Length: 260
Ligand SMILES: Nc1ncnc2c1ncn2[C@@H]1O[C@H](COP(=O)(O)OP(=O)(O)OP(=O)(O)O)[C@@H](O)[C@H]1O
Ligand SMILES: [Mg+2]
Image 1 (cartoon, rainbow, N blue to C red):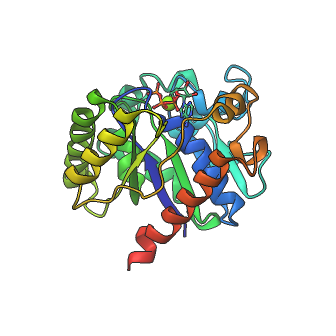
Image 2: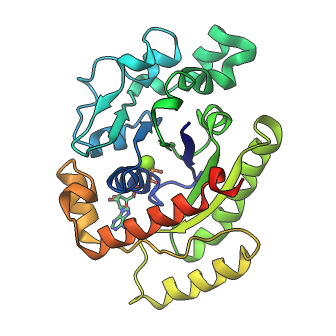
C-alpha cells in the first residue's frame, strides 16, 4: 500500500516542484514503485517531466470531476518504476467545481480516486501549488507531509506559518497526517546566510524533523528542468544526484509506515 507524501509550502518558489520531481525519481531509482502527481494548475511538474500541458489528453482534472478513470490518466516516464499523473490549467478553480459536484465529499475527492491505485505503488508523491487551493484535498489524501524551505531571512517566518497551516488541516481533516519534516533546498554553504539560517531553523524546529540532508543549489538541477528530465536521468553521479539519494533514503527510513 503506497505511502502518500505531499510536498507543501504556501510560500512560492521554495522548490516544491523540484523536490517532488526529484524525490519521486530518486525513490524509483532506489527500487520503490512511485507515482508522482502534479496538482498545480501552472503545471510546472508536468512540463518539468517533458510533457506539453496543452496536449496531454485527460489529466488529474478529468479524474477529479469524474470524467476519466484514474487508471487512464497515469503516464509512464523516462525513469523505470516512476509513473506520473499530469495537471492541467483546468485545475484552477476546480475546488469550486468539486463543491458543486460532490458537496460534503468535496475535500475527499483525491483520496477517493487514489483508492484504486494505492496498492500498485510503494510511494505516491504529490506536488502542490503555493497557497491553499486544492491542498485540503491533497492533505486529506496524504500520510506524510514534507515542507521544503530555503535558508533566507524571510523563509523562517513563512516556515512557521506553513507548519501551522498544515497542522490546522491535520486537526480538521486528517488526524493521521504525519508531518515528516522540513527539507532545506537550494543550499549553498558558500553563503554564510544559508549556514546561519540552517542553524536557526534546526534550533527552532528541534522537536520536529529537519532532514539531515540539505539539497544543494545546483546548475545540474536547472539544466535538467530545461531538458524536461529528472536528476536521475540527467546527471547521475553528481553532487545533486548524491544529495537526492541521501534525502530519499532518509524519507524511506522516516516513512510513517516504518514508524509503526
Ligand atoms: N536545488 C536547486 N538548485 C538550483 N535551482 C533550484 C533548485 N531547486 C529549485 N530551483 C529553482 O528555483 C525555482 C523555484 O523552484 P520550484 O519551481 O521547484 O519551486 P516551487 O516551490 O514549486 O514554486 P511554486 O510555488 O511557484 O510552485 C525554479 O526556477 C527552480 O529551477
Ligand atoms: Mg511548483
